[in-house]
Length: 284
Image (cartoon, rainbow, N blue to C red; front, side):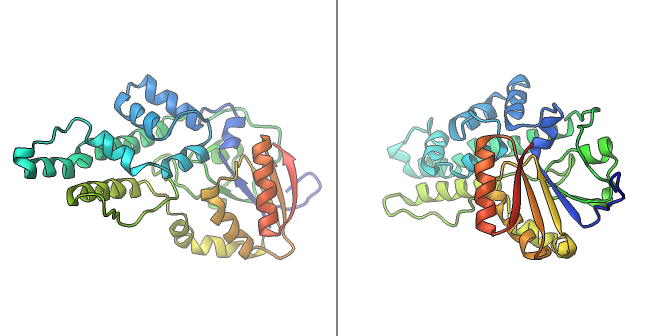
């Protein structure tokens, strides 16, 4: 409730990583990248630098790049030091088939383990922003931190951490691949590349599955007539959440889409036009 007695019970705040960053919290992809380097996870660091690239601070760019991996490049890395023994070709074939289990799988497991370890150690600011964060509104946050709960006193029952919390974080890319087939490859090459796809599919963020898992929550938004978006960079992978919310909320619902960079502003405008929503853009 604000100073004039207005209630926010029918308002939904959608909160992204930019919200935590505005509190000077080190929660960007670039911060995770620095953490990997300072904690000396060099094998993982080199793998990500080679296959994903580190020239971004945005999680949406990391997730997009992660999903655009090259099967052949990863295959070449996995088999780089395997010398083909043409006198014992079967032995070489087995070595190539097993190479993703030896070279790639440990990097995937290390990434998941390191990400969870980094998230659990995130520091939460003790200085709130001078903006309205009403306690009676509903919140859908993409963040793992408890900034809303600890710093603003938002009741936990008013918040959905759509991608999990500090102790069960969900991250990944949006490019789920099926089986691999290439007539120019041998059977053992195909087998190895199918393993690569399998490992990378383990890093797939199943947004539609997450929406289905939280079906009751999304359906409960039917009476929302105001949506305020703060700290979102409007990544392609998270677009289905906006589609589902727009399907459920009141037809007269108004959207306030926050942006921080010109890219955010353009992405917010694009989403507004695509969804056909009543919207205003504001700098956050």
